[in-house]
Length: 113
Image 1 (cartoon, rainbow, N blue to C red):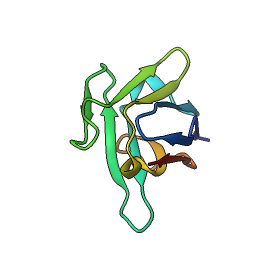
Image 2 (tube, rainbow, N blue to C red; image 1 turned 30 degrees about the horizontal axis):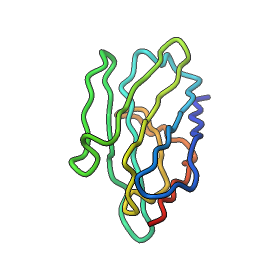
Image 3 (cartoon, rainbow, N blue to C red; image 1 turned 30 degrees about the vertical axis):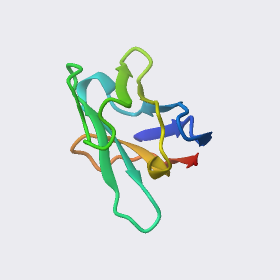
Image 4 (cartoon, rainbow, N blue to C red; image 1 turned 120 degrees about the vertical axis):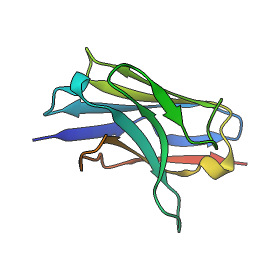
């Protein structure tokens, strides 16, 4: 059974930082690309960042230069370091296995102005 468990969300003031984690089990983590998505109230889910098995990364324009995606294959964990947070970053953040319908339950990030 594949499980993805996100953690690290919370309430932070604008300009602050948070680090999200996603622990993965049930698959050979190192063999899959991974993504972070987010969904704000009333909006569609959007891709925030992705990382390939070789560590190549890509980002949505809205988070470039502020967010950093990384992975630790030994710990089977995906990370999202978020800095210079803005109120528009407020959303539920989800990790998912690239090209697979495996998703975590989400973690809420709220940025106050």
